[in-house]
Amino acid sequence: MIELMMLGFLAERPHHGYDLRQRMNALHGYARTVSEGALYPAVSRQSDRGYIAVNEVDGEAGPKRRMLSLTQAGHDRLEERLRDASGFDITDGQRFLVVLTFLSKLPSESDREQVLRRRLDFLDQPVAFQFEDGRPVRKKDETDPYRRGVLTVAGATRNAEIAWLRQQLEVGEP
Image 1 (spheres, rainbow, N blue to C red):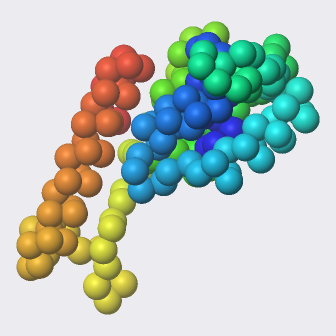
Image 2 (cartoon, rainbow, N blue to C red):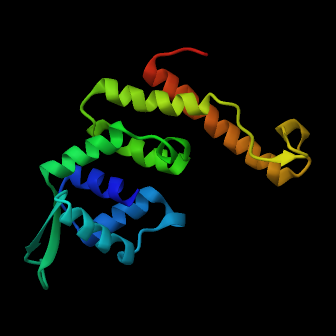
């Protein structure tokens, strides 16, 4: 996700490393912060691959700063990552939110719709979060109020996302 967030934010405009990390942390959430130890090696890898250009610019009141910008190869890579989103990029809710954040950077409406359809197909599958004796526990049968809360929140979130996806894709109930 670091690569996708980096390419996505840089597709919007160039950023200094610190600013980029702040934006990535805001998107990815407090539970999955991006450290400098993760960001700067990722910047180096993306630069080595030709996806990111790194230029030093004068700082406003101090030393030179590294300005990061996206190359054409980086734009192409971003489009590829978005178009080909699958696996955990579709099934993991947090990862899908990152994909969704930058999906408008994918120029083809058809490609965007295919990504949304993959997510909707995943969400349309039966799901269970808790099991007892190998069978899924239904909210109405859960006696623990906190576990029932997990089921309530997860169900409401899932239903809201399904409704939004269907609206975007202009499809009705299955």
